[in-house]
Image (cartoon, rainbow, N blue to C red; front, side, top):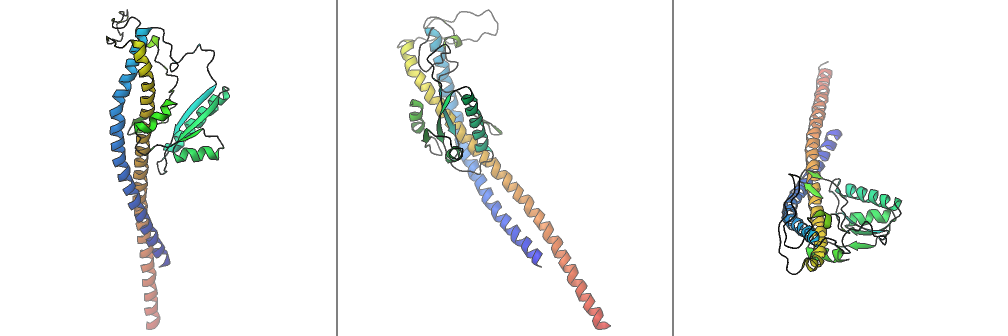
Length: 290
C-alpha cells in the first residue's frame, strides 16, 4: 500500500507542475504574438532607411563619415564594443545558452586578433554569466520586457528568424557595413543610374534631394544605427518569448506522459496489492477450514 500511496503523491505533484507549465506556455504565447507584431512591423521601416542611405551614399560618390566602414583607415582602433542581449528570467529553453556561447566565441576570436572588448550586457542572465567568468562589464543596459525606442536610443548614441527557428547572430552595428558608395549607383543627385550591361541589374529609384545628400546623410546615418539596434532588441525579445513558449509546451507534454506512466504504475501496484490481499484471505479461509 505504501508504494501505491507514493505513486499517487508523485502523480499529484506532476499534475500541479503541469498546470504551472501550461499557464506559462499560454502567457508566453500571448507575449510572443504581441512581440512578433512589433518586430515584423518595424522591419520595413528599418530596411527602407538603410536603402535610402545607400542611395544617398551612391549619389555623393566618395563618402567620408565616421559611421561608415573605412578598411584603409590606418587610425582604426583595436577596441570592439559588444552588446549582448539576454533575458532577465530563465525557463526559456536554450535561448540564453546559445546567445552566450555565440558571444563568448566572438570575444575569443576578437581577443585572438589582438583586440580588446568593451562589454555591454542586457539581461540578468548575461550579467550573471560574465560575472562568473570574471569578465569586466563596461555597462549594464537596463531595458524593459517590451523594449521602447527611448530606452535603446541612448545606447545607440554612444536575429529572430521565424517562429520555428531562432539562432544567435553577431551583427556588425558600427561601423556600418555595406553602406558605401560602391553599394549604390554613382552619379549626381536626382540623375538616373547608368544602365548595367547585365540583364539582372537592380533598378534604383530616382530621387530629388532637399537639402543636399550630404546633409541628409549626416541625419540618416545615426538614425540607421538607432533603428538597427532597436530592431535587434525587438528580435531578441521575440526569440525569448518563442523559446519560452516552446520550452513550456515541451515541459507540459512531458508532464502528460509522466502522468500516464505513473497511472499505469499505480494500476499495476494496486492490482498486485489486491492479488496479495485475496491470496491472504484465501489462505486464511483454507486454514480455518482445515
